[in-house]
Image 1 (spheres, helix red, strand yellow):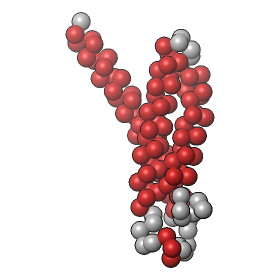
Image 2 (image 1 turned 45 degrees about the horizontal axis):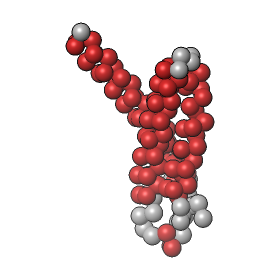
Image 3 (image 1 turned 135 degrees about the horizontal axis):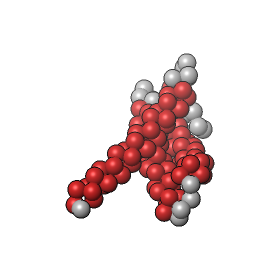
Length: 111
């Protein structure tokens, strides 16, 4: 009995970690497109202006991945199809990613 509980908990942690890593990776790819597409930077931004968006946005994207995981778990708990729960959680992730991009680029490209 205890082995089944630990195996199930391990599977839940692995799935949650995959959602978190996927959310952070997608956010890093999106913010990298914005940051590295700038040819010149404004002198008012400072020398290390790229650090803030490249750290903050993937962190918020990872949080969005975790929210997606819990939305899919909630859908399963409510006995909704997993695919439907996942598709309904995508707009939630997009809004969280947009907020991360705005916060990351605040004061530089988002001015």
